[in-house]
Length: 539
Ligand code: NA7
Image 1 (cartoon, rainbow, N blue to C red):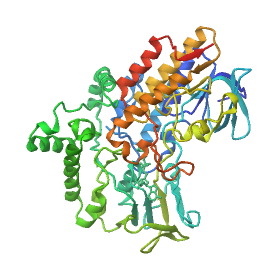
Image 2 (cartoon, rainbow, N blue to C red):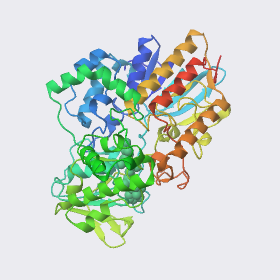
Image 3 (spheres, rainbow, N blue to C red):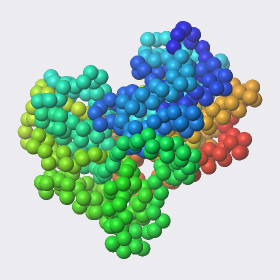
Image 4 (tube, protein in one colour):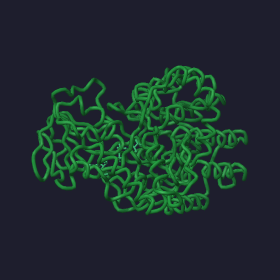
């Protein structure tokens, strides 16, 4: 991005999946807009998460953008679940194809945003103290973009290499002959562990709670298959749009309790060997919503794990006992459980022997000192609100967004928040960005925000603020839906928990996403439009 101009009609914050589509829409409308991106290059999640094994859990062809037929016809997804380097290539391809790069200013991390009521604009200050102004700000900062390190004593004392999975070093990391520790066994840890087990000299997995993880069943996509996918794109996106989670998987119409045990096993065997989230999303609906069926399915998966892990004691440690299948984000794995049959891999069960501290040489548990050359912290993110709360965002009367959201966030449709005029949040908390297939959700979000922006502009208006009552009603809807979800009592990032985020009460359930599914969410968005945006003050 050339030039030093700092005044724009719209500033988009973040050049990841959402920001790239958002700037495309604005440029197409002829809006004077820019994207400010903190990283050295565009790509967001796919720029930052460079750890080995990082790839989609969504079918690649449901993850790509749907807005351009030309793009759909040109791009060849090489694998059903494409890997990070290819995904980053795709993001760059899109930006170049549509000439978007010149509207993106990288290396510009927004640290402060202040609403100026008299001017009706926002001032944004970056890490160098440079100030930008814009009538409107659209945040596109992702759902899981603020990594958190664990609160472990002595974490800075370690003399070897250590980093969060989000900060995996750029240059190839030497693993051969080295003693590597991975802390955390969520979706990220499981991808890393599976990929590096046969490369590290010795691998120590520090597991606090096991997760229900099922096979990804990835495969290459040939030219011919890709041709078939291209023919089917309309159908694919329609299927995604109709489904709760934005995927093609369709729930089995039968009830688990209405079919025989043989019929259940037949379906589960089929789904366990099927790609992606099939076992979660194409199952009988009551396996998710009812305790008995959920327990039976969980027992089935436990048996599959027992068959894959040679040592029965290790197998038991890898089987969750505190929650059922689907009650937390299900990590998808490729030969993960077989990793524990290797001589160079050791599972350290932190429930039995908790970490006491990190030392100069490695990790000390209550049982032993484990010397390590490398420690990887795959300990998760400050979900949904992290990126917004990291910026000092001052709204009307100087209220700081972080303070408004103490306890739990509060938004209107996940897009707007009272007291912060002209601020639109694509992938904001309480939208479906964190609860459904991300690109499908953000295309919806970008389109809604862009239409609202165009409506405001056409009316010659300059100020947009959602009414407090409408926001309250949306939060109620978010809560009502979440409280009916069976996972609501389980601590995971789905319910806003990350025990490592210092400023939070670790025991409070939070409402960070809308769990009503894509179709219901889009209905709410459409209602807002149909009612002439009556919940929003536009002047
Ligand atoms: P997650 O799913 O939040 O997982 C974090 C993992 O780190 C989880 O296994 C935690 O164990 C573990 N953790 C956190 N703190 C500690 C400490 N102090 N000691 C030991 N272990 C700890 O993050 P991911 O990055 O795996 O996945 C996030 C999303 O990214 C994923 O859902 C995808 O959408 C992409 P715990 O369960 O808390 O015992």
